[in-house]
Length: 380
Length: 208
Image 1 (tube, rainbow over the protein chains, first blue to last red):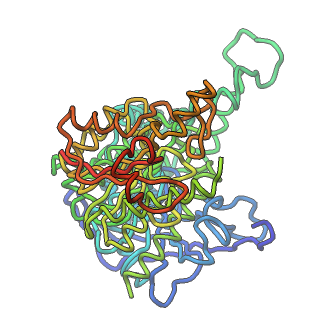
Image 2: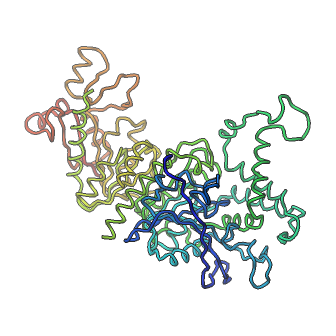
Image 3: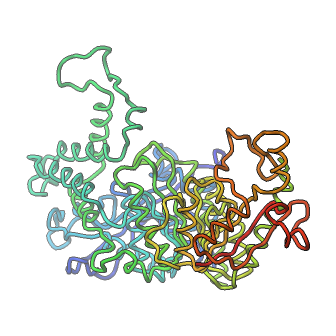
């Protein structure tokens, strides 16, 4: 709604009073969680929605931090007053993941035992560990059951994990451009990104916080990532073979094509806002994600996770292709859980969940409205 | 085309199908549009419902009604489902638009304990006379398209369908005929004598 005054929000912090038992077996603490909320919780506590961010996201998903702020939250298109995930109707919570670098404890946080950043002494974490931390936050906010958990990409993984880990605490789930297990292809891209960082001479075994930053490695990692988030078609539309600065080929290795310039820019701006170690830890957590592991089948894993599901994929997403959403959908159908699945026609590739405003927006708004009504009926 | 009449057929179709379905059963509706039939089965018969639809616009509408709906082309089947998984699988007003109706019928009779199939009857006397006297591909209120733009690519008669079932040991548990000009089930003489000539629409409850 153009006429609404901009939503002003503030990031809040919660210090979890106890340690968390990690999947790796280690106990870890203390943990601080950075989070934001939009809208207000109704008296029946039936309107709480948890938003889960992707690899490079943060707690700030909607609105602005100050009137002068010109960059809204990462999903401002979807979240806020009058938006599909409407803060006039719902109480929306968004937090930074464990292992991140935007306020929640991660490898760049200070280890209270040493007074220095954790670096590589930070424990290996999983998607499930991120969800455990979010559960603590929800307990602190005194929300017994969420109306929905929603997220794209790594956020979709967390959404699915919520259904498996805490089925009684969630009524519905919206995994977007997600998967129940990372494919070999995606692990391969993650590994190349990690190697780019680790082989940067400034990386210094993860202990670079006092010295020069492994800028080149992190930028290359981001460039690789960005290629996987786009599609052949969207790159063609956006850049084609156009040259950036000149009319004719210059016959050297300087940046010539627009697509090169774009990737350099993406790499550089990422370096300024993201911690290299966080990328290592978060990408590893994604690699480890496999909901069917240990149970031999996805159905068995989901068998306790009765809830309403909205599964969304995009035609041009080759990083988390539609077949992966279909695996989730068919497992849920076999369990007779109510499931809505749709593959949205989009040229934006994996990034479509951040860009497909109209189709995805309408779908989310409709699903939330009817699911909220059903949830209310079941509560009464 | 007469949208009002088409609507009355649609409502009649839904009502009769709803009568065929036992309360509390699990139902898969293929080509479920906006999920109207499923919603009434859920509300009035306490059925456990799931829809399948190919069109995003319809899915969007079904989602606003709270009808769970999977975007899928049923011609690909649902090979991952065990036999007799649903109590009823409904294929309403969809048979004639399929590329491989035989394959789809086999699949719904496999995944459903019962199948409900409804389709417009191409053997109706008005359609026959249209072709006979005009020599043109028949058009009617429920088949309003031209030959070059019709989605209806596998048109059949009531007798075609009965023969199909007989040849493949499919049990017809119930058959209901509709005439657009008088809403509700066709009754009396015409119905008993010659549905292939007088029914504009057939609805079948099947089992294998």
